[in-house]
Image 1 (cartoon, rainbow, N blue to C red):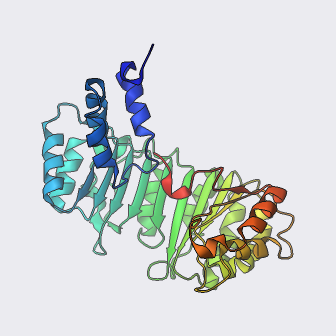
Image 2 (cartoon, rainbow, N blue to C red; image 1 turned 45 degrees about the vertical axis):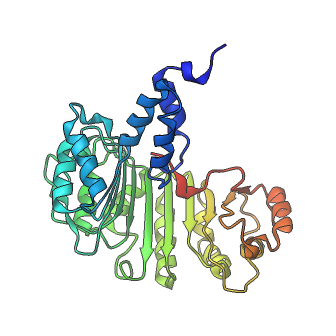
Image 3 (cartoon, helix red, strand yellow; image 1 turned 60 degrees about the horizontal axis):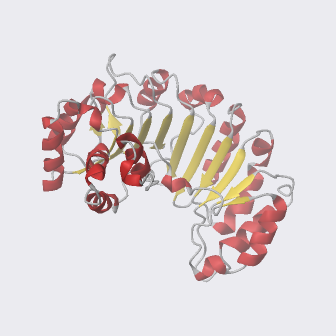
Length: 338
């Protein structure tokens, strides 16, 4: 009888890898240390996976230990995903020199910004996913190419128009875009800026995340931008207040109706003591003009809260009737894989 310990190492690696939707899950390290002790055949794939997705924070001891390990490896291809959290200049330089086939980079930095030339060409060449929670400065060099980049997530306003234009021009495979709108960064920057308008016809997914309260200008910008996304397959809207969902969707109705995209609503915020997200979501979908829209998903992100349970039975029945896909049938967007 074949048991799991007898499976090929590559298959064991894949099985362990799918245990986490988010590659930088804080419990992943302890999990892999435990699986490495299950059986001799599990040790190698567990340790390989442990170092395949390092989280490097500032210049902490754990960060220095991981960098030292990477620098000793003859093959820097072991690292395929990385989270760089407030990295120092030394950390960035050492990491960029140690990796060769990085596919997923999540970069978090403080407001002073990072010179893009610190992101070495080897670090960017094989990159498929770039998640930026950082301000980038400077200009890309000729050799800094994004030959395989297909997904970009960033906060509007943290990339200059010049940098954004260069990034889009050097990313021929880019089709997935997620923009975070923030009051502190995005109020003076247009979503419908030239580089994003040039990219729009190629997009198959567009996500818009509201970090804080939206201004009427943000909705107006979406109204201008969405009709230019002629190949869109999915549109994701997250972070709205449940009380404003109906008015925002009504404003976007003409743009949404012209697209074949599945519309995903997630991470709704509720007023304290309100009726909960289920009641608000149903009210929004029942508003004039929105009843005809059929292709919806809704992430029941707060399923354990009392506010979320309020009206849940009615919500589930209505979702079934309308053909709305809920989080029980879809992975929550916060856990996308590279």
